[in-house]
Length: 256
Ligand code: 13P
View 1 (cartoon, rainbow, N blue to C red):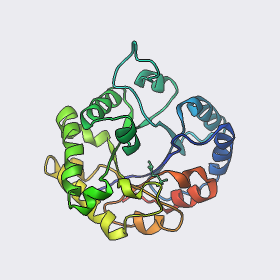
View 2: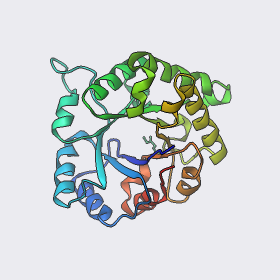
View 3: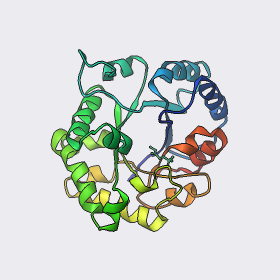
View 4: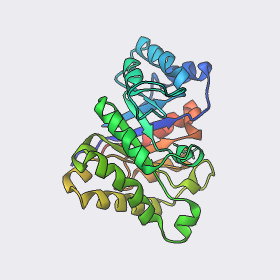
């Protein structure tokens, strides 16, 4: 079983042109272990600049670029939306889909997430599908049912075989931006549940899907989280805006 590790930075609605420069120059000497991909997802207005600076610093084999969202539609009268084709043209390779902030503030449903995943795969891009339970759902022991209900529409839409080209990020909503990280044991147990859920549909595909943990990952807790057998890296928010801290997190990941 060979599974690559991924450390993805979700800048959310943060950062500026100066951070594009600082991040690119900071990552020029990042030390990575075997089979690790680093993905930076800046806000859309900075994608083009980020790719240009990355290329001129010869870092395209080290740093991949991702978007934070995309439309499920191909083109047309959808003011404010961005299409997969536009991302392709900018050499974007990854797209975060269904982040809990989009589900919560923009009412994205798991059905819409499934349509977006389909559009992203059809364009030859890699979706990073975010799933996760709220604090109340965890407290009332609904975590597994919630995760299953977020994954099943995607399986129904694209078929399990296509998960070979998918990345899943498990982000418990209560751990995002709160400093409350899931314990190593809780994170592992939940990642294992996700892998077993996929394995019910296709075991060999399930064993190849990178599963990332997200929620208050920092330079102190990354190593133990990434050492868990079913955790293949992380989706990093706040700590990804601080170059030195982000580099430590990148260095802690390793393919399994
Ligand atoms: P934090 O790392 O800031 O908790 O954010 C996690 C996240 O939402 C990444 O998508």
